[in-house]
Each structure stands twice: as structure tokens, then as C-alpha cells.
Image (tube, rainbow, N blue to C red):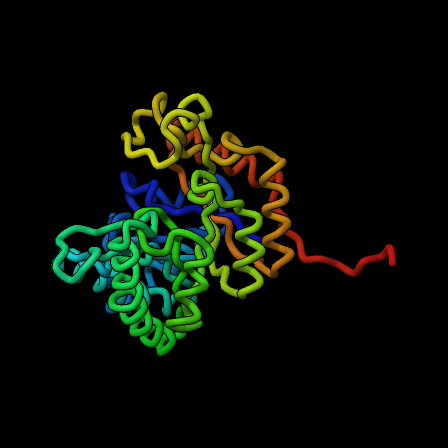
Length: 320
């Protein structure tokens, strides 16, 4: 396994400074943001069109011992606002072409359309009744999500690139079953960016999720981010909490730095399950902890993961 970072958290730095920092703290890999909600802080989205600049970027990375292990373009390419949808769909296509240059994956959301063809805002459905919610779900899957991603699967396959969906509430694909459902319906270039933080507050066991996704041979990328459930609030409001992420004391749950939501009792079995199902790629740290600065939270995550990750190849079992 390799240790990396979802580099959108360094968007306030110049690219060279961000790369220097990654080298300084001992990372193996970096996940580059190039559009969608993470933005394109270093104007890399179309760098594949300029061979000179692309070569310069590759040299900067190589000089620091960093591999690109993911192109981040989380967005909503099926947004009912056609302008937003077009922008995010174009960013996704550019991400695929850039990922081809680095032989890596694109990380995205599935997106969320409206509940019908005339809606103007996304409609995230959370229950099957009243019946209009089931009708909305059928529309979203059959008329929008499957057709759109079937087309993108074909484009990605043409360029030898895989697409890793982050299962995120607010998007149609928000759990492991949905990822496999879309993969079966739209193509095998589609799989998972496994982020355990989003599963904790949905009541999904990330270890069971890793087994399920691994058995379906579709873990393409893994994010390392933790989540803490606040029993004193979750017991009152539940986990479908729309209060600001900044209102930490009054939320039912919050994102945390790795090791501060769950300890070894989760992270060691989780890492072990990833290896058990054949995942030996990057573990990419994503920092969204409202109780720690970026520097402190990120470096504590590195320190923790270096202790629980499995880095070496398995040797021959000497005991049998």
C-alpha cells in the first residue's frame, strides 16, 4: 500500500510548495484536484493538451518521489441546471484524459439529478414512500444515471481509465450496493473510491463495505477520513443533519482526522480487509476535521496511518 493525499486541502499553496510539503512529510502519492467541487487550484485540468507543461509537471512529481494516484473531479455532471451539468461533465472528460497520461483513476460523484425532467434542483431521495419518491428514483436511475454513465464508461474504456465513485449522501450513489448496481448496468470501468467516513454516519459498516466491493472487484481508490458520531445529539436529531459542518457542538456527527473518530479497533481490521480482498493501492488522506488545523490534522493522520497500514508484500508463510 502507498500513502497519499487528496491535495485539494493544499489549494491555498502554490503547486511547488504543496509538492515540497508532500515530500517533506514522506508521502508516496498525490491525488490532484482538477475541477468540480474541489476546484482546479493549479490550472491542471487541460495540461494534457500541452506536452511541454505536462512533462514539466511529471518531472516535478518525479523529483519529489511522488506518483499521481488519482485525479479528483467530484461534481454533479447530471445536475438539473444544464449549465452546472455541462461544466462538471466537461471537467470529468478532461480528468479522464489527464488520468490517461498518469495511468491512474478519476475520482468523482455519481451526481444527483432532479426528481423529474422539469425539476430545477437536485432531489436526493431517502425513502420509497409516498410513491412519488419511488417514481423519482426510477426516473433518476433509468432516465439519467444509467444512460449518462454508460456513455462515460465507454469514453473511459477507450482511454484505459477507471472511474471511482465516492458514495456520498446527496448523490444517487451513496452506498456500496448502488455502486455495484451501476457497474453492472453501465460498465466495468466504474467502481468505488471507498471513503469510510461517509459510511459511518449512514450506519454502514465500512469493513463489510470493503468486503462487498472487493468481492465485486471494484475498489479502485481509498480515502482515509474519519467520522465521529455525537451520541448526545445523534440521539435527538439522528444523522440526517443539515446543520452547518461548522456547528460542531450541535451536529449529530462530524468528520474527524483519522484515529479521532475511531481507533485501532476499526482501522486495523479495515486496512486488513482491504488487503484481504486484493487492494494494494493508495490510501489517500482527506482532511476535513473542524477541530484541527490542516497542518496538525493532516500530519496526525500520517503518523497514525503509518502505524496501522500494511506496506510490505506478503512473503511465503513459513509456519505451514
